Structures are given as structure tokens and as C-alpha cells.
Length: 184
Image (cartoon, rainbow, N blue to C red; front, side):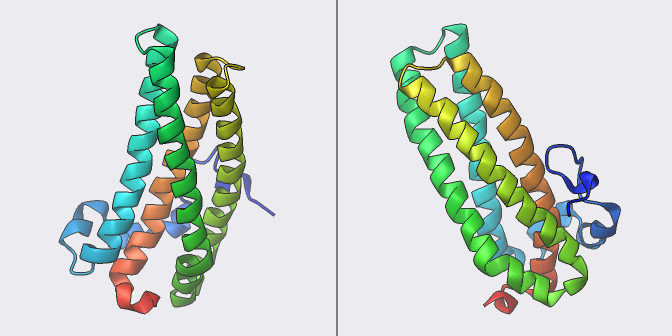
């Protein structure tokens, strides 16, 4: 059963009990850590791509609503960037769920609650991605308007950003502590 404090739609960060790792490995020290290059840098780049895609989609939707982005251009960009976001995010979560999260949890079982939270996040994000896809398709098929998509995107983006930050705060310190070789 989920604790309301752990819920993606309402939480403001990881519970204090799970923040010990990020306190031991603060964000501003990550890039200088010997285990940063390679897996951690690549993984964080993927997260940055998701942030940039949602930011661009939001900006485009705002421009479409304001009438400063032509409908055909908006649809083309939405189809390309929205499809990329959905496909890449699904693939990314699948790799995390099937490989990285179980291995990392095995390295430090006392953070199991954190991986339970992230797993529930992935399920919540699946539902959000389905709604995102439905409202994006409505715009693409001229059955919906950019304003409705924009509102859906704002909700999706806020929860995705919360998830990415919390996931980074749990996973990156574990990889830095154990090194990427411990994940194979």
C-alpha cells in the first residue's frame, strides 16, 4: 500500500530517511566524482533530454495557444517530439525496472522503499503518458485544441520533473558509491 507522502502527484521530494545518500553525495560534487563519467553522465543526459523535450513541447503548446506558432508547424513538432518523448521514456523506464533498479536495490537493501516509490512513479507516469498521448493525438487529428493539451502537459511535466529529481537523488549516489562495474 502506498504512503500518501510517497505519491508522485503530491510529494515534494524523497522522504528524509532516503535523503542520506544524496547528503553523503551532494549534487554539486557528482561531476567531479571518479565514477561520474560513463554511466552516470549518460543517464543524467537522458534525464536532461526528457526535461528539454517537455520544455519544448510546453513552449510550442503555449505558442500554439497564443497563435504565434502555426497549426501545421505545431502538429509536425508535436508528432515528432511527442513521439520521441513517449518512446524514449518508456524504453528508459523499462531498462531501469528490469535491470538497474533490482541490481541497485540488491547493493543496498535498506533503500528498498525508495525503489518502491520509483516503481510506483513509473506506473503513475505510464498513466500520465497515456493521457498525454490521448490529448496530443486529439490535437494531431484536429479533434482537440492546443489549450487542453497544454493543461495536460503541465500536469505531466510537473510530475515527470519530480520523478526525475527524486530518482537522481537516490540512484546517482548509489552508482557513485558502488561504481558502474557493480551494475553488470
